[in-house]
Image 1: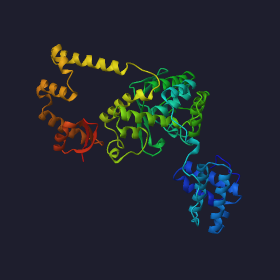
Image 2: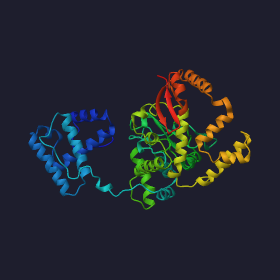
Image 3: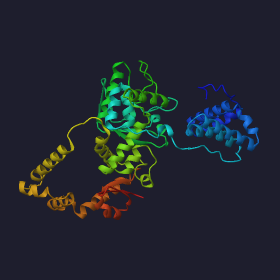
Image 4: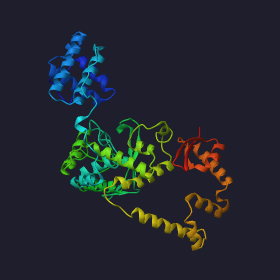
Length: 442
């Protein structure tokens, strides 16, 4: 409130009290509602307190006439409805009700966005190519990690994504390295829209853009620590400040316009959601993973799996699924094609069957024709007692002892182990795909 002078209305103690009450829920909402009320009062030439003294019908007529005027002046329905939200918030806080419902034509229909589409992979590549290192790094965090702008830099510019929020990124001797790719991106509760912490990932293309941007800052003399912002507010040498949400949108909009596109910056997050929806259909990416990486609350099933601190095996399963989804996200081809990978996988499997399990070439060729389940059963026979019920029971007992000592008491196991874990006192939580299950101690 102190950052902006509201010169069209007088900020009285009553208005401050309403503002502060709204601010406890969301400072953004409080600021926006104050601007909405200011706009309404300026247009209809009335003081906020004068509205409270008007008879109900007279006030309702005033607001109804305002809607008619705005529609005749060709303002969009969403803009008109937005102003009414601020007015109604002020009235409701003062126990003032309207005598009838105010209607806005085509309310809820975003006319300015109805033809907007998410970019294709080729269009996203053009956006990346049109940007400088900071613009590319900012854009790819939204398009490949699904981050909201306010997670990169908050509303006031006091917090945002930091170097320490990417724990698998190391900075030594002026060089940025990643110990694992895809790398984890931690979204702390302080910068999460829901207030709950969650994780997402960044692939090799994104890691290369972050590396280029951060090393450019290192070369300029900046000292990067785990508390340093990933994206800073300024291009100057004084780079230590966090960036504000509104400026994130400005940064991302620049390469979009340079690429000849007219979409909003937030559409890059829509790209992440859309491409993972395709991955959900094509490669069986679990829907709960996609929802979780987007920072949404998720389903009741997710309450038992993804809203709590993730077990290491679930975390690695997420990393594996994200890695498989990168072909739908990334704009650059990396490594082998799917066909080459399948050929290499078959060659390696045949070699293992011969060298490790002792099969002849002819026997290995026949085994390669079996389904995965049948091949697993054949290998279990070959191994003898390595996977017998007694071994499974001992594994369940060992997991029971370890899980009982941890705050997070969940484990991921093969689906065939469920009965043995039930006997040890575990409860079934959910299935992950068709071959694994999440179990937990009560």
